[in-house]
Image (tube, rainbow, N blue to C red):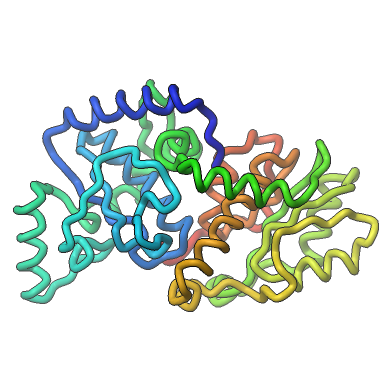
Length: 319
């Protein structure tokens, strides 16, 4: 999630996007951070930005109650890249799934009328993440996007997921606490609530076998995980490797629901650490990706094909 362009380039790109985005007659308000994990939310947003661009729909973002935010909504972590809606009715009815009660239908209509929205999240979300992202060629010259969503949407990150200065500073501080050599490999091993979705999720022996069959010159391995027991096992089984991680010894698996119920400062601290982990994986010489996770789509798209390898190939559930 690097800022690949300068501040001046970002502002120019943002102005160009505003010019094009504002030229579209139809308008959609997309609700980000409405219940799923961070990278399911951010990835879904990127997919919907591309869908709206391709279909000439003005993209407006609602993030005032995002589950990855505190008091500032989108701007707790990121720079605004598009118009932001602050209509409180978004928090009532603007979700991935449409509510069918009479009260919900009345609020849905009121939101569209007061905001001028032609589409809400549930009108476009499932179209954007369906066949569109796998089959539709998006041509977006300003971002050098010429292809389908997943291989290309990392180019959109420089516009849509640019850290604000405070976030950038704090992520860099976290990264500077550990020293990685010029050459290192990275791996993501996911535990926690993903185990309930995928009984075939990774074990350490499988990971070691995959690594050693792919790379024989392992010296340093950065481990992106939510469960320190994986780090401990790797250190025990391969003491000759320099195992580096940002995961604390007390971390035993991410659970989305309980995490979102924690105080903002706790969530903020941990999300900043996750951002740093993602950047370490993007920067690595080779990354072994956990295909069952939404964050892997960000990492995989940002890596050259010869610098990425899947651990297990599977479909992401519960988008």
